[in-house]
Length: 128
Length: 128
DNA sequence: TGATTACTTGCGAATCATTTGCAAAAATAC
DNA sequence: GTATTTTTGCAAATGATTCGCAAGTAATCA
Image (tube, rainbow over all chains, first blue to last red; front, side):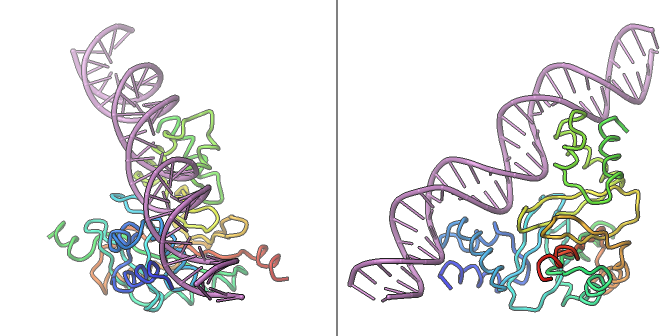
């Protein structure tokens, strides 16, 4: 584990929300180059030390978000107003995924699920 | 509904798999420009005539895929070997999404779910 | 029907996230 | 500690997607 990779991993594990590559790069600025951050993120994901998903948001477009794997696999809600993520807790669709594997003879190596909309605060702000 | 938009919508509704913007552009080549295709896809999605999701695939990177809304909302499996999509049928996680809305006070406007791995054929080919 | 106004399209250039080539630097092997 | 492998920084390249703007098409109104 090199210094750059350790810095990136520490950043991910220290965050309670998924981070974009740009966010990680900003967090470790001065320590490592953005290309290094991208490479470190790929490395960590290959090693099972991080997970990622791509999210599309109307305002901010498409970005890939990373989460450290120090907590169990989970899913997220993304608020399209304040752009924060809300933790939906440990994955609850493992059973459904297994059903699909059986029913259709698939070998599922990963699944992506996330919700988008307005968080409680932003919803309250919009329609009081 | 202009000619370009109709062509794009017809292409989407005629496909039994999600299509990338590039795929749609190729399908309607000669009829409309790629910028027009992108604009038409956005228009159709805004009008509720199409849905999209962004998928990340190791080999092909990140792409946004579109599906015509002539069939009910559904989810997909993506084979990382042959890059085909397999229809998982009508959405089965509506209840789970509602639970999250209630539990966390969220207002969910959309959800994304897809599986990745190897389809039956590609899995058989790899480990006989 | 002709003219006025509004929306769409094409084309090319721009943008943004992400990746790559390559030489220098760090880590590991011997 | 020297040789070998892997990683990093920097700058330029890539690929999907978006934008500006002038021309084209559609819709509105007199």
